[in-house]
Length: 120
Image (cartoon, rainbow, N blue to C red; front, side, top):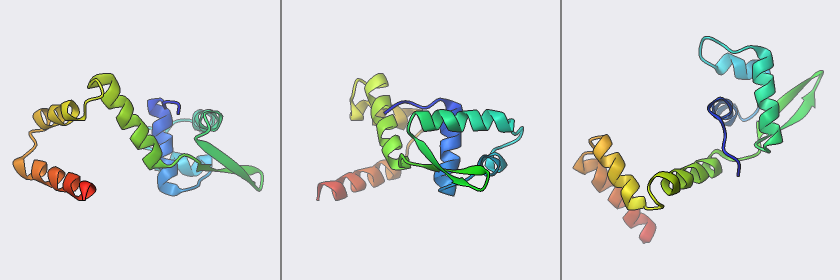
C-alpha cells in the first residue's frame, strides 16, 4: 500500500468521517484558510490513482468515497513507523512513547490489560 502525503491524509480523514462527499463538502470540513477547489480536486484525483478513493457520478459532478478502510491504513502506517524508527520492535516503540508522553502507571496497566484480553 502506498504512503499518503500530509495533504492526502488530511483529505482521507475527512472522507473516512463523511463516508462519501463531493469536493465542496470536503472543503467545508477543512480548517481555515481553506484550500482552492482545484487543489482539493487534484488531491482527490491523486487519491483515486493511488486506489484509496473511488467515485460515482451524480448529476454533473462526482461523489467520492474511500475504498481503503481507515483501520487498514492505520495498521499499515503503524507497522511502517515501528519498522522504520524502532527496528520492528514493539517494545522499543512503547518504551519511546512512555518516556516522551509521561505515561502513568495506570495507562501502562490499561495497555497490559488490553494485551491480556488479546491473549485470552
